[in-house]
Image (cartoon, rainbow, N blue to C red):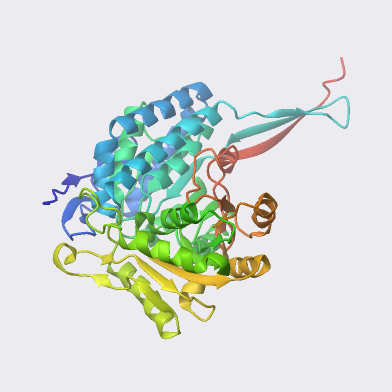
Length: 490
């Protein structure tokens, strides 16, 4: 079928005005499935970033002093508008990012849920009165907005990773500057238009698109008015941001790389376990930080599991995300295809067996895109790159194990600690394994684990801080202790 791409040119949002970059330059946004043009955005400059911070700083006093109820109403209305515009947002997301359209529609709903959830949290920012040591005093604990926030968001979930930051920031009374990934700025602009149309005052949210991520980060980290940075991206960049934060001791939330293990014990329900692995591994063509990257299957069901997995993976439809029936879209670019293929070739060269896939798709409809066949590798060992490196592609590597201790040892043998998964019908094992896995998120008998009402974040080199859940808003609040003296004396 012929694919018609959106043609959508966007602008910077600074202080309530949609504007061009001061340098006048723009850059195109392209479709990873066809190479076609989807739209364009301004190539923001240092002056634009500073102007966005100026606008956020100017809007801060009014926004932080507004009532929690008024902030909550704006967030709920923004969620409603996102749902009304879900078709447009999802089609734009698919065109610039590649994921299948049903997945993109699901992401729009997921993104809207963060506005809804944190609307409720805005109304529950409670302080406390603590018992004093001296009865003449009173002890108050206040929770106040941290100030201007910078949100640096990734390309793989361009709507949800932004609302997961903006929702709690707005609810807390913070103002924000958003820097989306240069591959997916159009989705970000559409979501910010929803916030604007919901009634957010000028300057509460600001958008700067730019190809020069280093310049944007340098400007943000050197401006003392920016008190907090929330970043989703690679561990390597996260480490750079930690170093950059030291000069002004800026607060950071970091959701970094993952390398999720997926354990299937031989008492698991076979088909739900296969479906769970597929859901975790192959959604968004394997380009999520919580994707299963290593599958460990107990010997008693290994052969049956592999056979069923092969059958289901080979039945998947690979194609343009806007084409009806597509389950697996393209990778974000050719470099991502190269990395996936390198992991496959390295594993095979070191003794693994290629079960299915393992090839770039280049013929016919795939000719101009960044496609890689859904792949299964049997016999992955510690000597292979895929055992320790995040693939970020549709490649599942399987390893057999015999004992629970062996599975835990395999799973925890990683510098990362974001997400992990396992399947079992043994209730005692379920609790025991969940406690032993060194990961911030554990999916037990489930391959999809993200939700607005749950704390999302990692351990070890997967970062720190939590997004979502009742603790998500804490990342955007300062705790202030106030001692009131001479209260007990008349």
